[in-house]
Image (cartoon, each protein chain N blue to C red):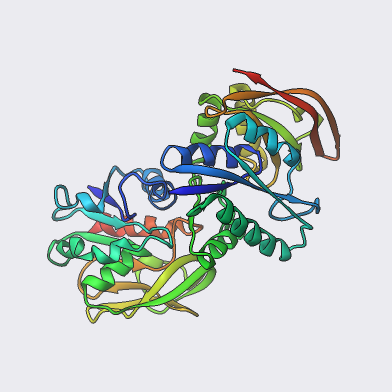
Length: 226
Length: 187
């Protein structure tokens, strides 16, 4: 089965892609670029670097721009999926949804209307086991945004390793935040994954944070042999 | 032994992670051992008397289990406890003579209990996630335990521990699976 992965460049969509590749053929990555910073569905820092991630893993990228109006963006997503199907002949869509019924049910509806398969391989995953697997399987995942207490500027740009995972576990228990950032507490950017042929090296970035709300914007990056 | 049955069209599929593994996680967190089996392997290894059998859901595009529902006929004459989830309840309804009809629903819905039963102990209504193509008429041997706007949401065999739920309890209603396991533990 040929699949298109809804791709934000963060750990969940990259890991979902990794899982899908072990069972089916991933033909393209589909990225929705939202102009609306408050987008419920699609906004994420560094989305413009999906092209570099696509080059790193050798899977073609299908990019589609949306104004990011709350319900209109679903029509945009549908249009993007229709065009991706025309270009790559995909039979289904893969998402990195973990617990968001809001996100998953909307994508399920679009796929159902288009007679496409819908896969959410991280759905209700054991979050601890998932994060341990991310760290141990050779992913280089950077914190690219923080959006809740107690995260501050010191977290931005850090690579999620065993030490950070331990810190996250303590914080998740203390402050009732999700270990995966599923609740929007933080966002990530993947510089390397087991299926990447090359890794992304960050040359220059801009990091800013106020009131536990900050982003790590990658200004310049290049690919290096692994 | 608790058998968790994968009803996806093929063994070892990408859908396993979405429809089977979350059920495994609930059973694991309940502290019970289990064995997961794909339905095509039931001819070689199936639950026996006093075992428990949980039939999981499938992707919306995956309805092969309905063509293969005969593989589940052993449920009718084997003394096992059964919980069918989504695709699982459709299989139960079909083998016991219920009529399956098209009724596609995706998203949250309000489930209202219509009969007292230990499966919904302490809850008269709750929000649940449904993701299905079909509805069914409850077979003669079954009573309806809960409904929603779109139709039947839960059934139970009149004489045996055979339950079916249309909604997906692994999403926000793990307690339903836990209640089933408690009922199974007391059978």
